[in-house]
Length: 321
Image 1 (cartoon, rainbow, N blue to C red):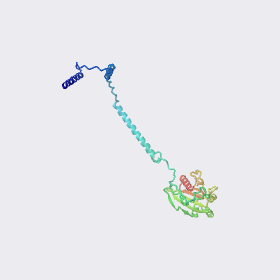
Image 2 (image 1 turned 30 degrees about the vertical axis):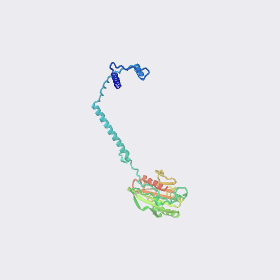
Image 3 (image 1 turned 180 degrees about the horizontal axis):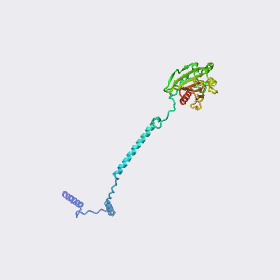
Image 4 (image 1 turned 135 degrees about the vertical axis):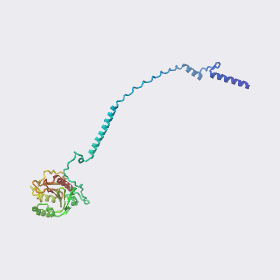
């Protein structure tokens, strides 16, 4: 029983090896219809024939070599490129240098000075607590409540201060000394009768010899200030009492009222030619309760410069406004 079983097993193993090796005598049994093996065999029998392989792609022809420009052309292009960059840099640098400089620092573009002086920056003094400015609503008398001495224009750069007119209070006698001897008594009498509160003054002399003096006369109200100015200086052919050294003055036709502050008035006169050793320029400002007298003179054949005088008048008017 055991031997037969071993023999049968050996015979089956031999047949299987023969079938795998495809040797004759080892015929494979045909699969039965309806089995999975039969379906696979049928599909293989009906499959389309394989597609023949495509012919090989012929190799591409080599590209023609790029032609190089002659060396002299390259060198010329390089030189012109460098030149353009250098010129562009120089042009940009020159433009920056010109725009970054002051106009007076650039040769050929310098602006000639018009003679104006370098005054300190204007600043108004502080008012007492609750006090209004002269031309605000409620201040009907148009009174300057600030210290009048602080409203005096300060001297410009380079000026030598007048030791007698230092920016403080002065007497009536010192003020009337600005006028011809024949007018001093009348002016002093009118100031004594009027409600004059006080007079502040400052003076200086510039390196070119131009002498400047500013007087501020403060009254009790704007009405008294206007009355004093109109009585002494308004509506006369000589524009008021003559100043010392200027027997005659006339209205300055070159004065256009520039820098005029609202609610203030300016009257500018000049000594016409032929003048004496020094030409005199004067101006009166009426600003609320205050009358200002500005005088400038210079001993020179060319007279007293007009531009710095007008500049002084404008700045003092701004301080009073």
